[in-house]
Length: 62
Length: 261
Image (cartoon, rainbow over all chains, first blue to last red; front, side, top):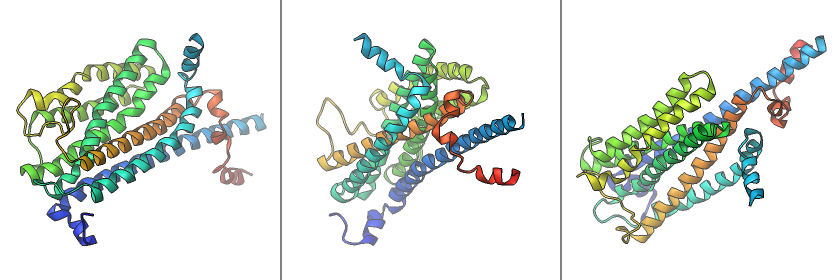
């Protein structure tokens, strides 16, 4: 074990800014990408469902 | 033999690959999480403090995987682009398109973590050194590929134009990889080599390899996720997409029908 306390862990031997600046941005990027993709998928599914509904309504009217 | 070839080509259509990608995705997400947790554990709690760089060297556990993946994804993307150009298959173009943003993110992370490592160790965020410059060019190649495809309305023409760009850009990948050998760079030589024993502690190496596997599995999972979305967008006019269970499910349409009723 390298660390005796949590504060020692977060200080990273004086390199805290650099280590957490790297890991933090990395974590944000790798979480944001799937999140934005999920939104993009929901958007296309929503539009496909609306088209299906519109078609169904057209048939009911005709 | 011929049977096997037929079976493989069956998955070359968006219609049959869409459900297959959906079944594969959870496995790759799980593997990414398992390797990621193991890699972070080894990286932060098992690997010892570095003799010269102290704790600052721990950036290596994301810097090297992101850099490897940025180059590897480019090669895979260019391969699919080339297949799409040669065989004129729709799915290959979609594969290339699905990989580009993930590759761009990996290149960005490589540059970002490199800057955050360079500042404390070299005293500068950035230097126009061969390794750093060629990686920056890789990042711009990804962005150029994405922008070019986005600028062309017809997706099949966009695939072809993008493929040419991707294939021309392949020349940059060996330049990045060998830049530390060919030129005198501020960037250090490779930490891992096939021909000599590694220049780092065993546990450091294991942490790095586990993190590389995690990044790799993540890239496959997120690539498949984007591919499935692109398939839906580009095949929206087809009957099979209209008949998908997730399209037919009237989840958020109840409100619309209430209003019209």
